[in-house]
Length: 95
Image (cartoon, rainbow, N blue to C red):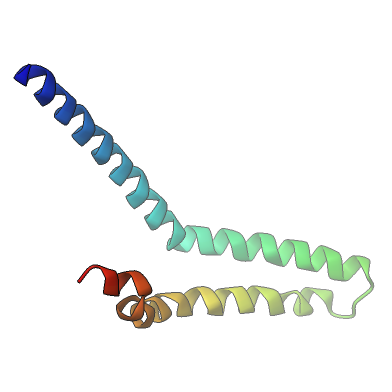
C-alpha cells in the first residue's frame, strides 16, 4: 500500500520534472537571439518579395521597416514584462 503510494508520488514528480524541462526549453527559445534572428530573416525575405512583386521602389530598403518594428518590439518585451509582472492580476491572487 505505501509502496504503491510512493511509486505514484515518484511518477507524479517525474512528470512534473519533465514538464518543467519542456517549459524551460520553450522559454529559452522564446527569448533566444536565434529565434529573433530567424523571424527577422524570414520577415525581411517575405517583405522584400512582396514589395518587389507590387513594384515598390527600393523594395530591399522598404522591407526593413517591418523587420525593425519586430526587432524593436522584441527588445522592449523584457522591460515591459518586468514592469507588468508586479502589476499582473494573478500576482495579487497569490497573497
